Structure formats: structure tokens, C-alpha cells
Length: 361
Image (cartoon, rainbow, N blue to C red):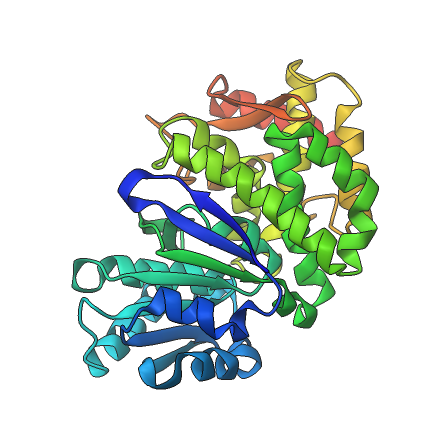
């Protein structure tokens, strides 16, 4: 039986289903599809694993399938345009349901295509990576990257539902699983200290892919994200807290051309940098970051930024981050584990000085 949560956004509210065997649950799929024709967008890596089960459950409703190349470096306008080409070729209209089957790159790109095609068609998120299950599939952020910055071109566009089948995590590489755990840890750090304690006590169960532990961690993460999104759908205030670690992490991804680091790996480093920054700024008690560093290390995630990046490179790329408002870089910092806040108190010179101090430690 699936756990069912809700993202409460008035008329745009939608359910999140979390459980095992949901991709082969004909009743759930038929309930969501409700007689409509379907186009499935997936990746060349995910499709051979799960496309067959999804198509079988939808019987003859699938008009076409679209396969995207795998990897963050392909999350761009060229690939987006190729989706539009295939939607047009399949004669999809506004009644078509688009299903995004894959990780965050598929969900973000296909979701943005759904937001734009014929001014918006319904779409369903079926995330197959832990990172996508706890983060990118929930909340309606859809986008592609620009060479100057991550997720610079996109739209807020909510899915009709999210189906999280934890059985898909059995095929995930260990590195990808760890990258997803980084986003799980984030929720504990920004607003859920008891969950952070649970993660300290159960991280090995997650790494061993214990189904009950995974379902609990995904549910707790989605509850946290759904509450924030319901309060601030378009990131005018509280939702910015979900970007903890991302301003630094996106700088790493952009500087390395999205090819050397997984998103969750960059975010893990970004969170440690943000906590170190918080300690140096005096908002976070000295030594608190060690708990996060220990947990991140136990998860098998990197602990330091690329050796070829320095303070100036970080600030250069941080200036292209979407959280820059009025020319001011906004940082998500901590007062304590479970208590995050937004700060705009630093100009470029101060940022470079603080970052230089961090790199020299």
C-alpha cells in the first residue's frame, strides 16, 4: 500500500504516492491517466529498465515515447526543442498527458516542455532516482540550464501527481544514491532537526537500500518540501531555504561544465561551505558543522570543493545564480541544525574574503 501525501496549492494541489511496486500498479496508473492519451519522456539509461512496465500498465494509451541522452550536460534548450519536435510529430494536443520517467534531468526538462507546449499540458512525475524523488519532482520547478548558470530558463509548473516507486532505487549506482541522500540531509539541516538525528542513527540502512528506511526518509523529505512549497510556491520568501547549499553547489556544477560532479555531490559540498560560512559569520555555534560533515562523510559524499576552484571563481559563478536579487547574492545560512535563514549581508569583496579564509583553513 502506498503512502499518500498532498502538496496543498488550492486548485493546483496534487498527491504524492510513495511505495513499492507502484510502476506496475495498474489501478493507480489508470486512476491518474483517466482515459487520456499519453506521451512518455525518459532517458536512454532509464527507459530500458522501466519503460516496459509503464507502457504495459497503460495499455494502448501511449502515443509515443521520447528518449533523452543521459546527463546534466544535456539539460539544455537543444534537447528541449527536440521534445517539442516529437510532441508535434505525435500530434499531441492539450488533452495529452506527458509522463516524465527518470531522474531530475528528465523531470526538469520534460516538465518545462509540458509547461510550454500549447501553453501547457498536464504532466506526471515518475522519478527514478532518490534525488528526484525527494527534491526535483516535488514543487513544480521546471527548467533547463544555460552555459552561464544552472536552471536559468524555466517555469513554475506543477505536476498532476508524483509517483515514487522505491523499487527503482535498486538499479541506482551507489554514487547516485549518495547524491540523493545529500538532499535528504538538507531537510534535516534547514528545518527538521529530529529528522537529522534519525539520519545520524539510520544512514547505514539508507545506504543498504532498506525499503522501509527509504520510504520513511522519502516521506519525511517530501512532507518538509510540500509544507514549504504550499507556503511559498514561487520562492518569494521561505522557499529560498530549500536552496541551502545550492548557491555554492551550483557554482561548482557550472565551473565544471556539469560533467565532473553530480548535483547532490556539489550540494553536499555547498552545505558544508554554507555551514562553515555560518560559523565564521557568528550565526552558528562553532563545531556544529562537524556533525553534518560526519554524516555527509558516512554517506560517501565528497567533503571539499574541486582543487582548481578558488574564492574568485566561486563568486563569479554565484553572481549568475537565480537567488541573486537586485545584484545582491543571497546566502542560505544556519542558526542551528534545523534552523535556516536567508542573508543578503555580503558584497562581493566580503564574500571573496570569507571564502578565501575558508580555503586557507
